[in-house]
Length: 201
Image (tube, rainbow, N blue to C red; front, side, top):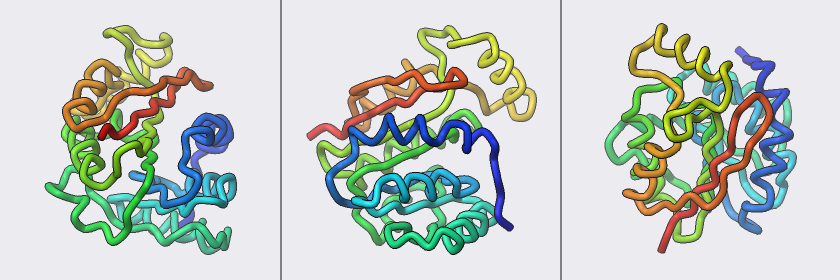
């Protein structure tokens, strides 16, 4: 039931160090597509001043997150909720008021409408000034950050033609349309990046 991704263990500390300076002093962080649940455990432990609220669309992932959560027994880690960002107005189903959002390794392993739905929902769920963190591999002006990212892109598209490493230029256009500005891009290990978007007034 409890899943484990070795790459998450390798990268979680670097991600936490990068998002820490941008987190609000208090509030709730909504994690979209929490996957195994390892990020949620690490972030809730690293940032006890905020409530961490994981989610996923996959029932098996939700079960894994819950297994990790029960084992960790952290007071600021909430039970995972089911969210499908491709569903219209998914944010209307939230019974929380997030003050930040975090999403790792989703938009390249999902159809493009998931990226569109992610920002459309966060635009309604987050208050002005709230950060939205997007982590994973990206292209920059059509170019890959490393040959390994190009190979990864090919493997993704071979599995599903709707998948692929996204160009940050395209993502930024989508974000801007929904009222988010790209405030910072941070290079992280394994040719990944953390993109810090901020909800505009």
